[in-house]
Length: 71
Image (cartoon, rainbow, N blue to C red; front, side):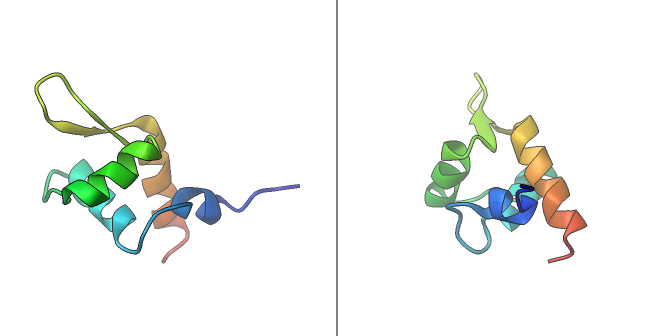
């Protein structure tokens, strides 16, 4: 049985979380702490030693799914 990639990418996220992830990845803007906490729980972002937020491979995959599904 094939799983829905969009369902995986949005599981336990609120509207706007993936958009914030795209903004973090492109270094255009930062998300608030609540949104960052949700993205961390999903493994989409991590905090580096210098305190900066970095998008993980899982996060980049979620971005690719978001872009390919034309939401």
